[in-house]
Image (cartoon, rainbow over the protein chains, first blue to last red):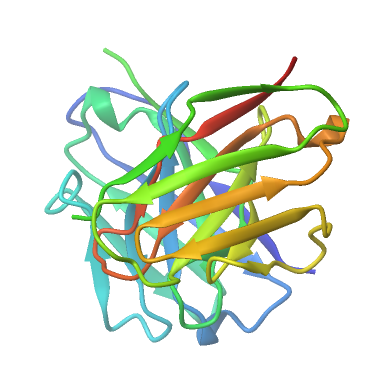
Length: 119
Length: 108
């Protein structure tokens, strides 16, 4: 059974930093690209970032480029999102999502971790 | 960036009736389109990929159609557990991967 378990969310001040983690199980983690998708309170889904299976290639939404860094440790089956220079508009539930094959849709999602920006 | 537009924003349907949800892309995405279902407090769940292929374990009452810029998700006979928000997503041309704004299916 595929499982994705996020952690690391919390309350942080604007300008602060946070690192999210997502531990994967139930599939060969190193064979799949992974993404982070976020959802602001009461809003829709927004793609944040994707990392290739090897970790060599990374992609970002313009809204987070230069502030967020996606990475992975295939030996630990873990995906990360380092978030710096956080802004109020980054408040959201952050989901870790597994790619379906080599396509860009998401066949499994974690339960999400809430990041709240507040001064 | 490909903009995905879903309509209607809210759909009121009685249990047992058919629901038809629309998704339009600002440019062709071929058949590289997925549909997700999200219930309150839960993560999204993949329903359909490649425009018309049901994901594993998805009931046959869910069907997807379309290609290019116009897509439809049909729920043939709504069950109580189907009342949720539905999102479409294109993965033909990225970054960015883009989602529609969602359609909420509510009980009439």
